[in-house]
Image (tube, rainbow, N blue to C red):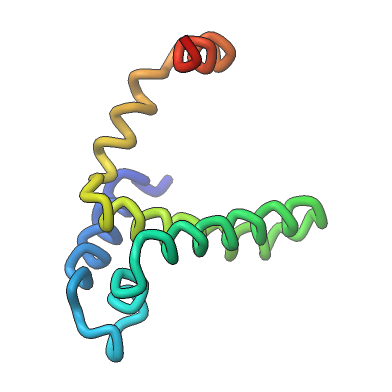
Length: 108
């Protein structure tokens, strides 16, 4: 089994190094140069592509589009100076908590 933490950390490190880089030489630097709104729209686009692939039961497309979605989510995190371990900490804190209860606690 793949250690997700280390894969995310490794990819995040590569992405973060591209921040402020030359947008003519790096796709990732180009995303940073276009700004947060552009990155957010790209995440929406990729999430929609995952949803469409899921609705069509296209496993290979779900895998490919999920990878694209995770990549762009990591770009957003780097853009906002959010590290993967911070997000994983939130997930770990939710262990054993009912999803309904957790959602209700955010609304209060």
